[in-house]
Length: 274
Ligand SMILES: [Zn+2]
Image (cartoon, rainbow, N blue to C red; front, top):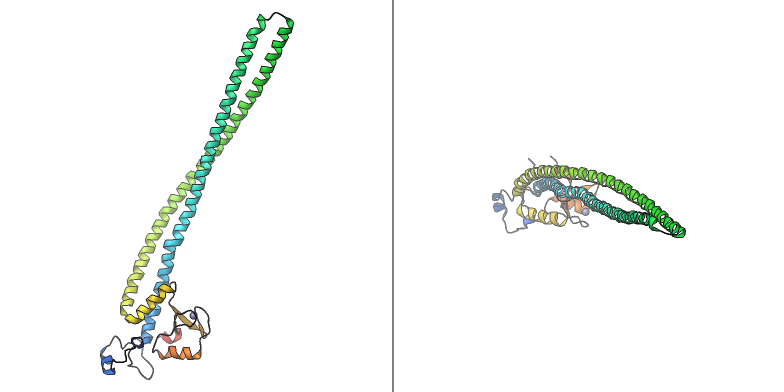
């Protein structure tokens, strides 16, 4: 598919740096005779696949779980709000019970004082008892108000609890839906990745082992980007200027040329086309 150009079309691939291989023998090694240019074309294809694989891996391992995590955090927050709300109701009920007991005591005191009223002999004692009854009755009405107020507070808190429970049920539903959506999406990503890996394996098998090893080493140490095109005499990755000498070295296709700055395999896209 590509015609080897240059003054030395049969020279073996340079990374092998196997100078003992005679030209005759090199001719026989049809695989090794493939030019570096063709190897670079394969590497560019590999990089395209690997970039997609890196993107998909990131989606699968980072983006999808973190989306799910957000909803889960919301759910946990609601769990705490729910517990606080329940506790508030319990405390209000205790307060109401306290007031009811006090009320009962006061009502009994009123009854007792009323019973005693007719056994009293003097007007002064009678008046004092009447005052006592009036005082108890004032307490009773105050306590009745407090019981009513506690009841209202309980009603309000229960309404609030209902709302929280409703929101929580909704959030739980949302979480379950999202969980199943994410599971489906991850399944799809796995299928896509499997397809890409199959494609990658076919190409990888065809790449010169030494070049492939270098590429693999770089793709791991360079976070998924092992190669960089020359764009307007700059490294397309780190944008550092590439000297004319380096460009000449690349065009000789004798050895892999790395960017001095970001240490990625450099290539000239226009040169690899066709
Ligand atoms: Zn660079």
